[in-house]
Amino acid sequence: MIAADQFQCSNQGVLWKGVKMEKYSIKQIWEAIRPRGELLPGCQLIWGQFQIPRNSLLVWLAMIDRINTLDKIKKWKTDVDETCPLCMILLESRDHIFP
Ligand SMILES: [Zn+2]
Image (cartoon, rainbow, N blue to C red):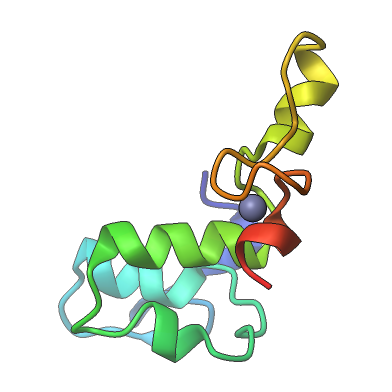
């Protein structure tokens, strides 16, 4: 939703966050009003133009610790064996899979 403080109407037209646009497009308006946060280190490497999106998503989920590893699944499904199916020794966690 567009908040009232994100644009101003005047005799010269509409200013979006102080940016005057000759021709309006949805992309220009979105770029003018979207919230911007700080980029994480390595972000360009993960989400670069030539990266495979599926791989980028997996790496990003690993970075923010949101991969459904067995240690997390165990928290909401108690009858799960947390042992890593690859090495059969340690518990499967993000830090075990991506050391
Ligand atoms: Zn293992």
